[in-house]
Image (cartoon, rainbow, N blue to C red; front, side, top):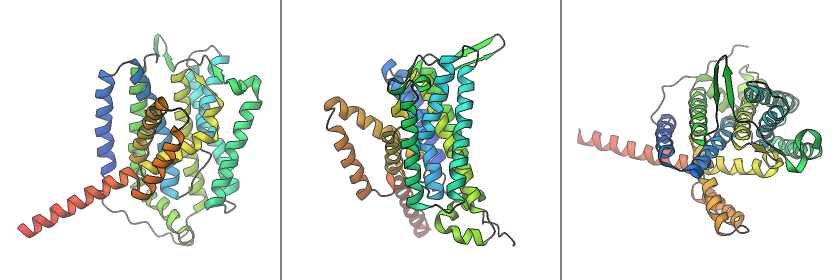
Length: 343
């Protein structure tokens, strides 16, 4: 069967919102890192890492419509891979090797899990439920496998991210350096995924969400593309988990639990699903709100976060980035209309 090519349109001003906003926010993060104290540098560093995590879910959920309720599994795989290797082996570049091992392991789990589900036709809420089960199983494994994972206590003493090449050795100990590393990785990944999303392949992924059956009738192997997207998303999440473990110096079962899987969904929804930059903003914003509210009342802050999420869904269903895109598009149309009338 002849495969019809997807139409490749020029990149619109609305689509340029993501890279322009990303570069502007990166500049803002650099300015903040120059004036912030040690405590706020750690907060900014962790926020950027979790921004990478939110970006990973948005690439899957926002491009294909597949909602993973178990994305913390892949974040935890990356974190525990770095922690286990760096605390048991004293060799050079062990944290980098841990990062690579975690990314590879997460990709393999996503490949196996996605193959048996997606090639079997599991979609929609059934896929979400199965990913939820994946997180529950992973969390129980981490708690039960005390000899390797430390059980409920987790693993402490994780080595910082380091790279050795001959006589050259680079060790990330200062939080400001961690901010720059996380920022560079986040910016590179975001721009790369944005480029993919606005390519012919990105339009194919979007077509799978709109009408997978039609894409299949055109000759596309839709389960294969879905599995590939799931793998890429899982590997990015594992990268974020490995970075967090090396920066924080410890891992705990919470990093692979249901709560974190729920949080990342909230970040993506608040920021704007499918916008790529929105989930990053959502992660930073919601984390900061949580931090401020928990300092006021440690028992009531989850209720405030829940109320905030509900309000966002009703008032801004497309998220903050979606709202900003709509406002920008309206201003552009109004300006063009005014210019035409004046002409």
